[in-house]
Amino acid sequence: MRWPPAPVRRLAIAIALLAALVAPGAATLWIWSPDASDIQARVIRLASSNGLTLLGENEVPPVLAHAVVATEDERFYSHHGVDSIGLGRALLYDVVNVCLCQGGSTITQQLVKDVYLGGSDLGYNKLEGLALALKAERVLTKREIMADYLSIITTGYGLRGVAAAACAYYRAPLRELSIAQYALLAGVTQAPSLYDPTVDPEAAQQRRAQVLAAMVADHYITAAQAQTANAEPVLDRGPGRPGC
Image (cartoon, rainbow, N blue to C red; front, side, top):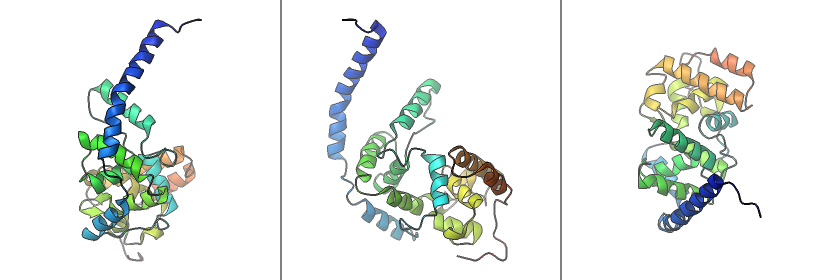
């Protein structure tokens, strides 16, 4: 019988030991974290207390969903709440660069962070958020998760929810926006105070271009559509808008 090289054996032993150490903690975390069966009720309460429009699963424009997935969570439709590839890549980047630069959080993790953890994913909350995200995906469909997330997410300076942002930025209902406008809404959520087009139109325009490029890379739109979208003004609130 031919044994694997020594480095491979050592790596396998290290992985096995790590798994043996982590497994009990993971089991405890799963048991002690909330079961997430009340997540929809919590979203409803959060939306109501903040005066937000709660979107139904059929009220999210597909182009907006595509923009959000391309920008924030490319494997949203294939993972089960936690993107192990993205999480591992973010962890490796942070270790190499000695920083907490990338979080690797999925859309589901961001939803449970706001609903269960008061908006914090630091320390133990980060670990609890992993368990909650896995549990949430056993309760809600992907379309429900997307609708809930876009209903309560911060979308600008003093704004929450994409419906409010559509009204504030474009004086139009969410369903009547253009590709460029959906791209801006998808991009502003990562740094609302920075990318709010009413605060810094130039930064918002640059962020919108990044979102459009990601949508082209993921084949949600064509390069020609992105070029047309990039030519649109960042804000359009003048006369002739349909209103909210």
